[in-house]
Each structure stands twice: as C-alpha cells, then as structure tokens.
Image 1 (spheres, rainbow, N blue to C red):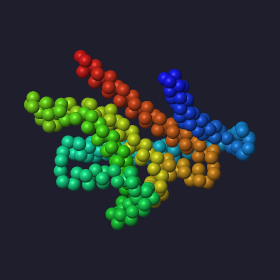
Image 2 (cartoon, rainbow, N blue to C red):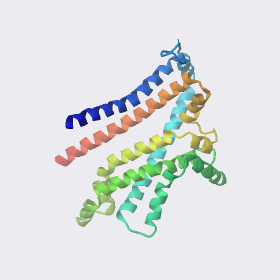
Image 3 (spheres, helix red, strand yellow):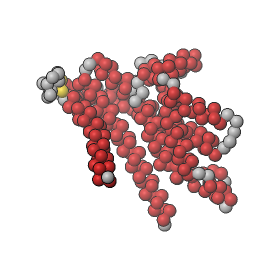
Image 4 (cartoon, rainbow, N blue to C red):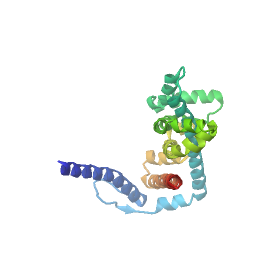
Length: 270
C-alpha cells in the first residue's frame, strides 16, 4: 500500500513539474521562432528578429525594468509593514470592530478585479491620483494586502506573544521586546509576504492600465499588447525577461531568508 502511494506521489509530482517545465520550454522556443503553424510539430522559421528588436530598445527596456521593479518593491515593502501591524492587532487584541477590520482586510479577495478597478478609478480621478505612479502604487497595495495580511497573521499567531511578555517582565521596553525577540522570528514570514505582494504587483495589467492611464509604463503594460496582437515572437522575449526578473528577485529573497536563518541559528546555539 505504501509503495503504491509512493509511486502515485511521484507520478503526481512528475505531472506537476512537467506542467511548469513544458510551458517554459515552449516560451524559450518561441523566443527564436518566427513562424510555427498548425499542424507542424516543429517551427518552420527560426529568427532572432525579436531579440534584435528588443536589444535595440536597451534604454527604454532599462527604464521599463526600473519602473516595474521599483513600483513592485515599494508595494511589497508597504504591504509587509501594514500587514505586520494589522496582524498583531487582529491576533493579540480584542476591540470593537475587529471582525469588520478583518473582513475589510480580505475584501479584495472577493471583489472581481474589473469591478474593483472601475470603482477605484472613479475615486482616484476625484482625488487627483489617476495617471500617477502614486495612484498605481496605492491600487496595487490594496490588491496585495490580503495576501500579506493572511500570511502575517499565521506567522504572528505561531510566534505568539509569550516571549515578548517575558522580556517585558525582565525590564525590556515594548520596542526592545518586539525588535529583539519577535522581529527576528517573523523575518522569514515577512519575506514570504514580501514575495507574494511583489509578484501580485509585478503581474498587474488591467489595474495598472486603468489607473496609470497608459502613462505609467510597466512590463505587463508593454508585454500584453504583443500577446493580444499575435506577435508571439516579441511577446515571448518580454515574457522570458519577465520570468527572469521574477526568478532573480525571488532567488535573492530566498538567499536572504536562508542567510538570516543560518545566522540566527548560530547565535541561538552559541
């Protein structure tokens, strides 16, 4: 019985890996493919036209890269800070309107993106935030917060408040107790929340287009029209760059989390 379960788990894992690897491989093939018509199993025409065209826009590409990453990093950082405070309030305190606050924190999960974007655009026009980077950051932040809050609530509940309370009894201030006791244990969860908020922001298209009014340029704003227009060659190059940037950011965050855990483990056991 255990052997059958082991084989089944390996089979399902293999299917999962193939469902990720095959689309990525096809994407990389399309980077160098000019024409691949049905029912041919192999591309008919290979070309580096898209790569040369993208390389010809190096200045524009650098600005696009900087704009997309900075917006997403800003959104992720703000999401973590707000989610941390919200999670501590919802986990450790009882107050009037607590359930309402939690409902509002996860509400963007339940509202369709189109409905949310239209309502936010009307509000932002009245507030003068439409067609601005600040407006795009706030809109992305609203969409990213539910993920960050949910992760931070689980992490905060797992860490608890007992160690902080003991530190306070021994004479530490509330700030010292938090930053020296709780904060180091929450860093891995904070990095997970940061990663989730980052990818939610980085992949936003419709919301960025509507709130940014086409004036705030990000990778998705430039990439999606090529997909809709049928130019898969150039769209695949942008998609490969999109994937590469995301993997680099996630790899960096994973390295930071691993280094933090190793350093703190050494300090703890020493």
